Image 1 (cartoon, rainbow, N blue to C red):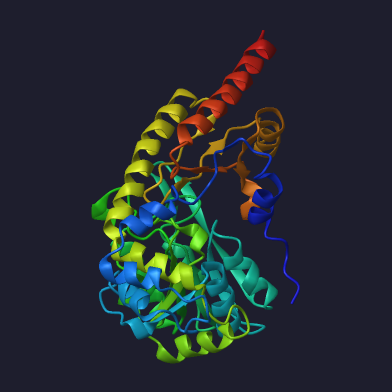
Image 2: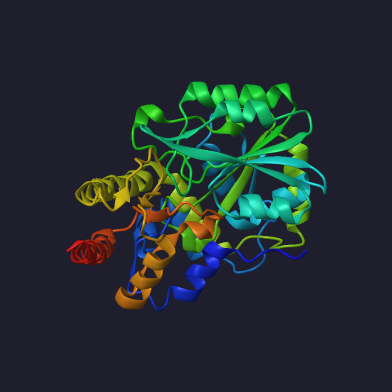
Length: 379
């Protein structure tokens, strides 16, 4: 299998060490080892102190699967397969899809969600998110016109990275009804479920409400992305077992320290979510003020959830040129739309870090310089 370069991750790999500031991180503020261990209950403290660095169980650590299952309303620990989040996407796609299958993917989204089906020989139909006067939206009529009994899989990413889009419940129900009528499987990358900016906008996991749904989650939003711990969840026992068998050819089992740390985190999930959600909302306020001030340079599209936004640099300026200048002149890393397979002049803004104000201050200097050059050219 020959896969196209993962442009998003290659940009981070190329520039992360050179960058002094980063505006486009999707992960939330990371926790220290001490912070997590201080949260440990007596059982987890004992598990940590007596930890063996041998092989772990391939399906996962029972206390962790139990803790993860509590984030759902109807899933059992046996419905959950532990793995690395990106590994989970790779395993699911390879297990589910065959050459010639038709797949519909909401877009923009994480590049692996459309590149892996394409590499596997599927017909990929991109279902575009659109900008309206009230923010991002999915045209459900587009889905109605394109989904058919030939559609094997509908791939979603809600809350969406990079846009922060969340549908309302009536829209989600219509989407799932269309999928159900066609016998279509649904896969949702729902890493940021639980980080809706308005709690009233919260949606249930698709794994709880659609029988042919599989979802992926991880510890990104909890502040432990470095543990590389995540999970696939589905009520379809055969699918979970098949994915577990495929995992024998990838990581086989998870890392022992990560399982204990993840168990502690998931047992304290509400506190960790609240911690990072507070950071996101504070940074969102700063971002709104910045883009309002510079409305003649940028189009701000309000996100509804998660830790990212996807504003647009207005013409005649080019976002790729802006990103390159930011890195070269200011050591500020900005991820532009080409990393997501677009040419619409958007760029990702990450709202989950404590140092966001520093990156925004550097970005403000860039915006001021662009405006100064515009004024000079006008004179």
